[in-house]
Amino acid sequence: MKAFIAANWKMNKTVSEAREFLKTFIPLVKGVSDVDIVIAPPFISLAAASEEMKGSNVQLSSQDVFWEEKGAFTGEVSPQMLLDAGCKHVIVGHSERRQYFHEDDGVVNKKIKAARKAGLDVIFCCGESLQEREAGKTFEVIQREVEKGLVDVGPDHLVVAYEPIWAIGTGKTATPEQAQEAHAFIAGMLAGVYGNKSGIIRIIYGGSVTPDNVDTLMGCKDISGALVGGASLKPDSFSRIVHFKKEK
Ligand code: PEP
Image (tube, rainbow, N blue to C red):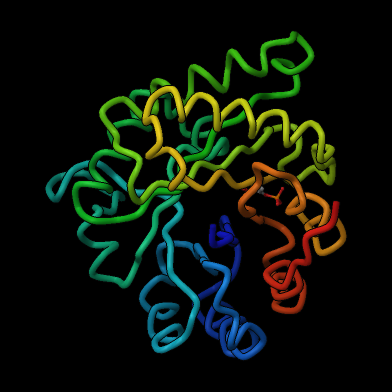
């Protein structure tokens, strides 16, 4: 299965900084054909990033989407607008959206369905908080988020990102064993829902992935890629992650 490595820039980089990054980064990953390389800049940089990516092997994602097509929804951006700006993917259900913008599983599901209907591929995020892990609720939380987030959503054009919240931006990576255990659980759930077709869904890991730990994480059986925040902000660091070497 082709690996899937995505950068989530969150609220970082101006339009000119995004262009500057891409001018340096794109040549560094030229010729990489066994990895889907995806970058999700802030909305305001999407059009410029799309221009810079033209003709390259780097794909564009947005970090969020609204579920309506158009209308009186001040500040929101529709799936159709994202497609027109050059996006192929959208991240939905990131823990920061759930935490700071109170997006619950129902909202996440609406966004996924609207994005898919419009023709966007979805990177769907799930994962437990530290409190939930310590209370032994890791699998319960993942199960709820996956079941409710993916109601009436097919397995095509879908990537699932397991992102333990305690590992995001904290420098605390899940151990390969912890990550593999959660990925195997998600793979089992998806197989229960989609049967054989679940094999097409890549399950990627996110949470303090760096050039130093990517090789071991990618060596895990059920990890097919990474969603990278902090370490995706520098071209050489993100390029090294894209050039991972599986390690056992
Ligand atoms: C993320 O934003 O999805 C993420 C995993 O961030 P970081 O790599 O900085 O932990």
